Amino acid sequence: MSGENGIDPGAAPSGSGCAECETAGGWWFHLRRCARCGHVGCCDSSPAKHATAHFRESGHPLVQSFEPGEGWYWDYSTNELYESGPELAPPVSHPADQPVPGPAGRVPDDWAKVLRA
Image (cartoon, rainbow, N blue to C red; front, side, top):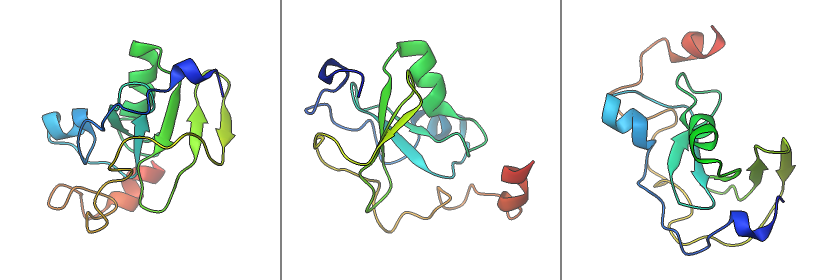
C-alpha cells in the first residue's frame, strides 16, 4: 500500500451510501470508502464514479470496499489491489439490508443496461 500515512483507522464512514449520489438523487452499484477520511463514494461501475472523483480531488489514494463481507483495498495511485489491510472504524460496510444496486427507490428498472452502456 502507498504508505500507512494514507490510512486513518479512526475516520468514520461519511454515511451508508455515496455522499454525492445522496445529495444529487443518484444511485450506485457498489460503494467504496476512503481509508484516510471515511468518504463513501460509488465505484467505477456506477454511473457517476464518485470514489475515483474523490481520489482525484483529495489525493487520498486508498479505498476499501464498503460492501458487506468484503475487506479488500484499492490503491488508486498504483492501481493495485490488496486483499486485506488495517481495520477501519465501524461500520465496515453499508447495512446488509441495503439493496445493491441502491438506494431503494432510485435505481432504474433498466440499471443493468445502463451500467453496460
